[in-house]
Image 1 (cartoon, one colour):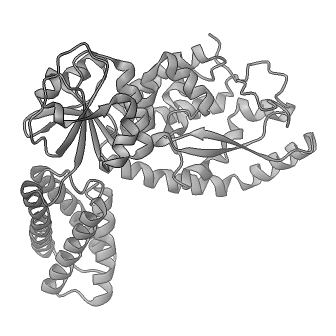
Image 2 (image 1 turned 60 degrees about the horizontal axis):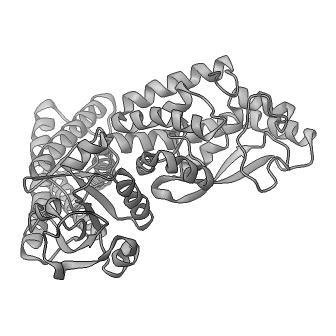
Image 3 (image 1 turned 45 degrees about the vertical axis):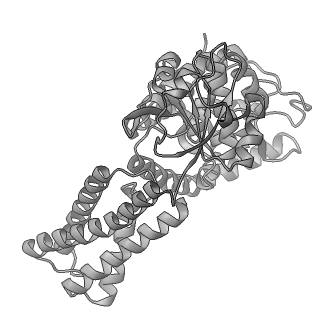
Length: 441
């Protein structure tokens, strides 16, 4: 459904572009250039990120602002180069035309989808976890189609129609798969943070959104905004809190910066590779499986800084005076040079420059046993650097990992481009100073 709606919006935008170009009388080459330009502007604005949960008021202002910024850029280009020659009045006319055509084409697609939801032609199969009073309070139509309920071990009276109970919580994965569920709403009466986070962990792997009722958000004490769906507040635990336009700018920055860094560090890479090869006969690069966004596994790439037989199959954390670290490895770790290859992971979309520190599945399980809120981190891409790494440093035990986790939780609750910039500045200072491998506690 997401993909079909995206295609419809792309076609609507293309149609509005072509109409405005024909009316304004631009030639073919300028027209093609402007079409590409507008698609880039609309992508950066975040308009294409969410295609089925769109507010018409938000759509209006997103279109207005993105068209305004686009026309300003075109006006600047027209004054600087001779590719496009537009006067002030022509720019004003083009702005009004482009906005009206774009907005009404988009509104037609959005309104058609809303009518489809109301008529039942479209729906989002939703499963509710809970059978008590909290589940009963959910309206019959919360913008989705509630296909049934899941009972948990609650000491509460069943308040909903027992015919709608699809099974027990222990069969959650099977029920979600069999019914092609797209959303899960946790509406239990007795607060259970471990259950909420366990649901989140399981649904990440299936790409299913997890929402909780407002009273549970207060109990979890997490700083997440509520989405009002037909007047009923629900909190989406699966979505990144950063605005879409900031996410897109961040991704664009990640790719451009990573390409430039990998190219500019080629001499350093050659030197490090030779030094590692001179140390022993092992490989230059070290790959290790980590847990990334939505619980997906990926291989992180680093310059090898330890002996080849450093672990022998047993997961071990490094310490400040770890004898497994090679001589060149100590220098690499001190200045974070061993992490240069991770910019390739960034280009591949497995990591971001700023995020949270990705861990191995073994340590994810260990951390989540004591701090299940760790799963909240998995809604964003892991990063080469993080607020936890900048303020806390490397951790030598699971307990210290949990202490560092608090910094990363603060980050995801408040993440923005400004916070990312702050973390990057801290990281650059750390690298230049060559801070120790492990922050002294």
